[in-house]
Image (cartoon, rainbow over all chains, first blue to last red; front, side):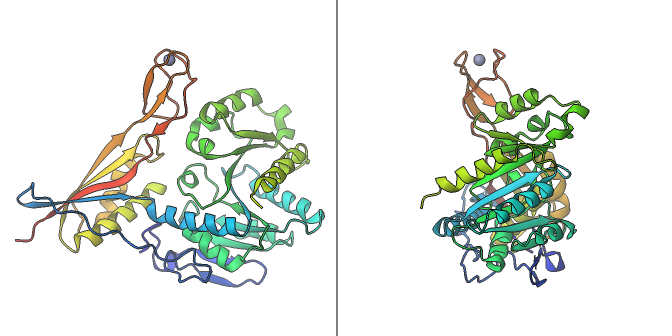
Length: 277
Length: 113
Ligand SMILES: [Zn+2]
């Protein structure tokens, strides 16, 4: 059983290279990886024995539960930095329009020419439907089927990166599994988290999931073309988001009609320009 | 549910340290702002620890608050949630500090006789 995610045997995440169709099981945290981001993390020595209790042995472990994930995430972050790759971790509830937004963004960047190469890591619990839509854009992508796992972990991204090998200077979009709770806890070594919220979901989502909106650098408010038809007050929602994260940037878009997307592209461009050359 | 992942990590780590000896008690520090629910940890622990050296062990959870300061009245505030507001009613507070612990502090294993 894997320390980080508890997966075991056949339940290990499945990696699919969508260009070649090649699939493999992820050897979570046990990969002797050529890129060296997924090597097993050494364990600390056992704790100090206590003489206080006569019949019990008190061990002070002082062990951070996320230490393993965070160590791999730090390696990924270094690896990405060394290659000048901008990695964004996209999070949302199911149905927020994340895949549509990503698809449209990939087509836009592709149409700009090859100035910015883009690749995608697609996290899903089961289906390959989303990955097919991404593959159709022609961008290199690897899908990670997490099975019962409700989030991507750093070791999964490490395995996906070995398969994907994104080009230096490129943009890496990580589509996390659709939920706003668990992905907040697991650092992937990304540059920033981007939370996508649609106006069909309710304006109080930032208060219901404060950890995610606190962790995100950007909130994309999607499906604004539906605002006339839903009971959603934009200012109230933005107020909630800023209450949990005063620094959060916000863009309002419709991935369907294209409204507001230039603001999102401008934010992307600014992130890339800000990377140390 | 991320609590299940965390509990599996706890059981694996503690089993390795215990080296087969029965474990009586595990003490965790869980920050109130860590987005981990103590109840969910307890719930998962019974199931996951079954058949391991941790079966029947007590899982003690020390809840650690976060801290902030009110920008309006200057009061120091202990946070039990990211949505807490100051006693004066203001939500204008400095960014939360601490309260994000997720640590196995210690465990008690039975002495071999
Ligand atoms: Zn106050």
